[in-house]
Image (cartoon, rainbow over all chains, first blue to last red; front, side):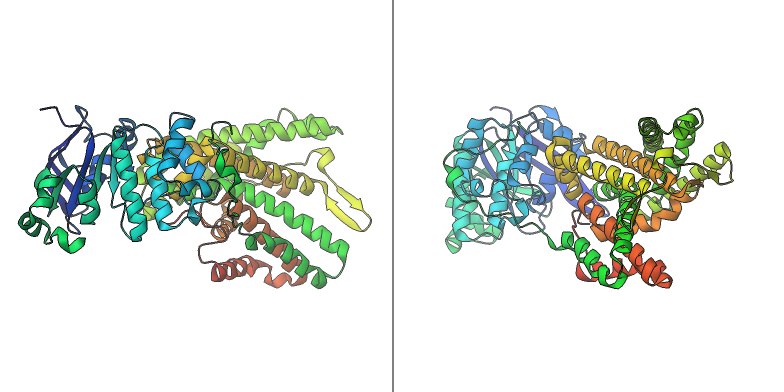
Length: 241
Length: 342
């Protein structure tokens, strides 16, 4: 079995006096899309932020491409090839759409073929190219956040709840964009509350509860097993379709 | 900027939505000047007051511009910023000592050369002290505002005492270079030469900062860092180095402001930087934390109001700045052009 691209072993994270992650063990295989599911407060966002080094793991190992990144600083983690799209999107609203993307392309000018490919995923961004990003709608900001993350080739994308608060039509275009990203060979770890979107996209699934991974497996198996959905998530897919 | 991608294909024909420029704060300055005209009455007095206000505003901007970036980007409340103004002012003595003859010569070239050297030496000295100040005093208290206020205040007191130890505690008079003394007289309008010089320097620095912030990658990084330093790090940039660079540049700008302020007052005191810090904080708050443009508009606004009110109702001059700040904050609670959101 090939070594996973990302592996967390016994990761604990404290935020101030609060113990949020209680020994997270999980693996993200190379290629495809892994969905991290769980109720509010289960520790999904903390897991992504801990991988990025934005909150330091208090113990445990985080291996990425064979190297331990748990004690590395955030910029160094990003330079190993991990891109992060936070739940807040963290768009630079004072910068134009173009400037946001230029800044994300750390190694130099954006390759024009890649630019065409990125804007092909999110054509709406072309229209607002030279506008300050603060003028974009919520869905457009999310598109820009994802485009910024892929401005250069990355080895892993961490995306936190990209469909949160979006209109159904925007969610559909987001799902299409992630499908295209998967087809292009990107490896994605996606935190998602929308089970319909998660099941439409996911190849693998991790379910978190109370700061621990309580289930890991193929998404297809979870979609097919309603009792497992009920037990892990308190829902069945039918209710969300 | 050649590295910026541009879209030239089919989207070039798509009409772009127009960027909504926030003109209202920019209109405040001419509106204020025009509003003051009927109250001042005499147009030549009005022009003299306006030029004096603009010059004062430029000097405040020079002293405050570095601090607003430090404030916005690093979330550092540096009460010690005033010491860089004082140090910049005293650095003129390093140049004026051996080159006093350049200042007395009736030659514009020599006089400007002397001013240029004073500015260079002051900026170099304050940049070096700024780097040490950041490393020794500020770095241990990142993220703790209360400690920042206490520690930077302490740093200011210690550095002021060092100035006393090196240059003495008595005020030191300095003379303006020969060709910058006196005034240009056009009809009834009197404009002091040094104030016109200050306006030119202030505009040049503002223009340079705008170019840097809007046309270079380092400028993009600073603007992005002011807004969301965490995301800049997540993109792979080591923002700590940027912090230090901006702190050093901010200190050097304060040094430049100190030189201009010193020749304006023509007297050096170790506390001259601290004395002007109230004004500096007022313009930063008016402009919006982290905004260089806001700092520029705020500086001009405060200085014009101080000049007009000082002429029309001298007893109100002392409170006029606070009144301007209160009115601006009632209108825009985060300042004229807020960038950093804390």
